[in-house]
Length: 278
Image (cartoon, rainbow, N blue to C red; front, side, top):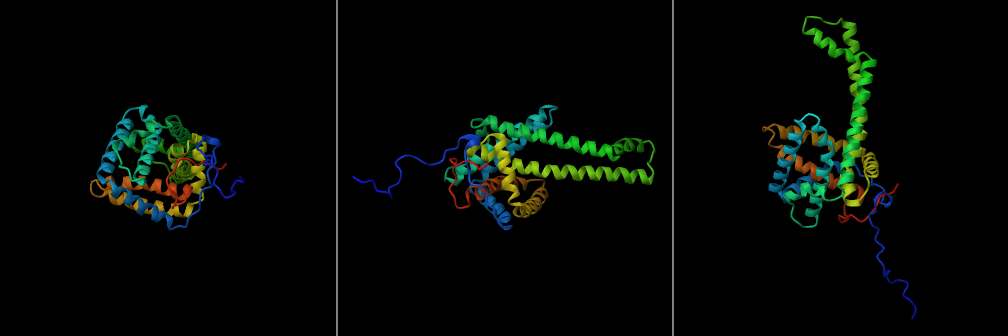
């Protein structure tokens, strides 16, 4: 009997996530209005399980605060943050699939691709140290490095002349601008990395590269997103910071929303079986 040419293949041809070599569609470009949509959708995710989100937020920030208060151990926070974020991305996908969000989702990153998630944190820490070193070097070369010494001397009545003070201020400002300019791409590389690791089994470098590409192709929506997010954080700080218990979960969920929008297409079902184009 002649085979039907229109019959679907008998074997499973769904692309499987297999690490750095797997292929994922190139990140989508979105209009500037997408930045607002991501935040609105983030609040909707919060509304599906507000109490659990608040508990998760309290636990997460308590852990990070405790770690940050311990000398040297505070560096571990950089390694753990992507692991926690990976777990929260899995929690968002659970909500997407009609499943309940659980406090345990915060720690689910410790059970899935933990090494890659920790490597993302390690690369972010290394990048941060290098950026700060560059900023410090620029400050020293431009005279800004002397400002601290003059500040100490100022307590004893020593005040630099106007020309020297101007040079130091210029050096500090230049160093700060360079640090900011370098931190932006580093944050872009970090933004989607946990989601790409847990959903697509990418290694740390591949995930950060893909994240950087996705953010770069959506600079305009991220500008709007950043402005609105900053306003929300400021508003959340007003009532003794209690508003952050709502704002921060919504912003975390908005990362998942923007990930789906950029890497899967906003109408695509949440999945972890595709890969990433080089």
